[in-house]
Image 1: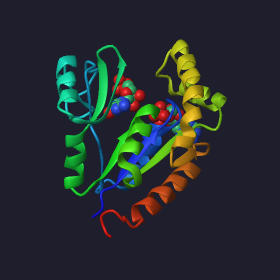
Image 2: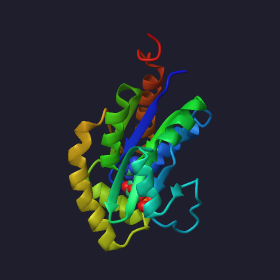
Image 3: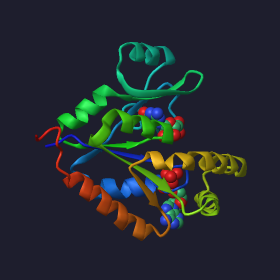
Length: 196
Ligand code: ADP
Ligand code: 5GP
């Protein structure tokens, strides 16, 4: 069983949760989310070990010193997020494919780390206007937050060429069919590094 990784990144509102949820439903026996560590406080119903491993900023720094991370970012002061090497080992030891749902910067760093073992996918709404409409319809953000996300998206989209595959999420059923095809062909690729 070869060790594989799927990385999904997207500007907020592009449909990443919807598309990743669809893939995980299809492959529920053989794929697993990597749970990141963070030094931010839990929100709402979030549970330690489920959404994140919640640690203090000093515990996070200690983990950095121990080289415990594949990659990490300090998004702003004392707010760290990172992918634990122990999570990667745990999921691979179980014989499962790892699924990452991270921001654009994290996605690019993970692809650099995993190389050919990884398929990195950038999910993009068909236009900035469509993205804004989806965020308005979703109803989870204030008008100011929506404008901030739209502005950030314009910058993030410039990184799309750094990904292996760019999925334009226009009609959802078409996007589902396209991603199913791309993931399935990646999973069936012969892995030269583990089967010489
Ligand atoms: P993200 O995880 O990238 O922030 P979501 O998956 O939450 O995005 O999608 C944002 C909103 O757009 C949600 O309300 C979702 O139901 C809707 N949506 C997702 N894909 C499409 C699509 N192809 N067409 C129209 N609406 C969509
Ligand atoms: P939130 O605080 O809303 O849960 O997440 C904030 C941001 O951190 C999101 O963009 C999310 O994708 C990103 N993130 C979550 N886990 C990781 C990680 O392990 N590494 C990196 N680089 N970013 C992460």
